[in-house]
Length: 618
Image 1 (tube, rainbow, N blue to C red):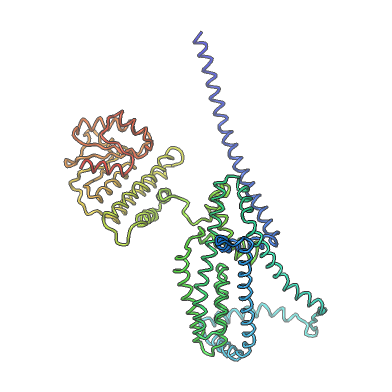
Image 2 (cartoon, rainbow, N blue to C red):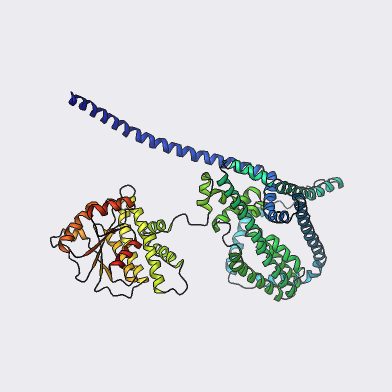
């Protein structure tokens, strides 16, 4: 009877197993389909958002400008409120100061431009003389005359048939449209003036409303972010701090550029020097294009004013010096990477927002993209933004080190190691400091990188990957030990570092021996694996001077190797201190189980514990 039941159960289990095997591919296929649908939905949503931003730019541009100005002015409003000023009075005072500053600046620029336009006719003779000089220089003999002559001949031969077919008796007729009436001209003139004024008025109206209803808008954004008050508060606070800090630091950078520029142009003798300094302060808010535009005006004016070339050369030299100081000293000192955007991301953002919103989009590109980057830290759906646009590395040092080795780029892997070691070293480090950083590199970068290889050994790693990793580690260890040499001679080693079974074990033992030598502990490694030596028939042969044997095992289930090696080593070297380093075993419970099961002298899984154990033995 029991046999019949068992015979019935086994087919049921087999059927259940077959059904599970059938369902697993269906489940994975379903997951791939869901992933594809989510990607398609993301592309559709992105297309809809970009379409809305493009066709709704008349509304979104003033709103975005108002939000950024509110970020810039909100600290001043908060400071006045802390001093006891009511909210309406603080906002009104800040708005009056802002409008007064902008109005005064615009009036000054208008007056200076009026004076300059009246003075420009005086410089016509100078401009004509210099242009004539450049024309004579261009028409003189040069190395390109032959190429230019050939090009002109080919162009004339192409244009000649068309000219011969023209009838000389036919006269060209030019159609002239009706001239606009005075009313139409006045309306067109008013339209050109009133449109910018209307946009400015909308911007300031939005800004006042944002400053008045800041807390209410804050609460509404919190609700939009999913209702998690902790995450939402952190996201909005980070966005406010990031954008506000960027705008204030950018203003400070521009001022530190504009004031020396105005003083320098004044000393050189360029007319309206203060005005060009103000233009530089404003235009440098526009990425990439703004500095070029602010430099063209004073250079052109110096070209027109001075009959010689001294003023032009001095102006160009002043601008170049200011650009070098601002880009390489002032900007890194004041805000550096405060936006968190990479250089490529800033260029891509400038291109994207300029395509959508024109010149205003170029001005707003960096702050808007920085807001998206901050939100990507808290909204999982925007995680790709941080990956694509962020300035922080997306791979950890261990992941980068492993990828460089698998890609057969040993020099780049060496660069990863040098960057990690030199990151926290002083300019003139001591030998102990270098040894400590090398030890940290082995423990926090190299060995975790090989753990990545070990985890995917049976699934993702191909034979070519294994070969590249092993050869890469060989070349890397050789170059790395030459770059960070040890003065200690290991001819009579106290510690002998060996690998248990695999080639990777031997490379780890070479790293451990190098770290020990830098710590003034005489160590040596062996390129032959220990199990192979024990199975050769000669037994395990070790140097007579060693006191400690360090066995590196890179296997997720090291029990069999530990059992075999402990038994054979105990037979041949009963007095030897043996340390087993199981680099792939990260669970403390499993370590304790191995320790108790085999009664090992020492069992470690990281470089720090290994060196501490060896120091207690020496």
